[in-house]
Amino acid sequence: MSYDTRELLARLIQCEAGGEGYDGMAAVATVIMNRATVPNGEFSRVSRGGDVRAIILQPGQFVCAMTTVGGEYNAQNIYNMTPSEIHYEIADWALSGGRFSAVGDSLFFYNPYSSSCASYFPTNVGLIYTRVGDHCFYEPTARYAAT
Image (tube, rainbow, N blue to C red):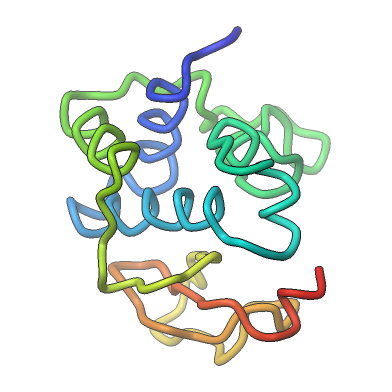
């Protein structure tokens, strides 16, 4: 099933951060847009100058974009989401240039299922920047630029 960019982003926002309130959803949308506009590294090559769809659908990046995880069906994926107006509002805001400044230039996020965030993103390509809700956000390190 093919969705336009707005629909795909709204579904990803709902799936990745639907329970995190406005700030959590805006933070996730900002990371997606940061990846689509970063001038170097892996995400720059994937986005080819700003292709948000390519960023969202990049293999292995977002569990919510995977229909199977570890060989098992992933019921919580973008194809099973039913976004509400808030998800579309945040998608529109992000696509029109809105950014949640609290996460800066973060390119990575994850939920550590812990009360603390690791100092570095698991592959040392990101340095902790902040935490919003249950998610830790990481800005790129010099190592990221070489990816």
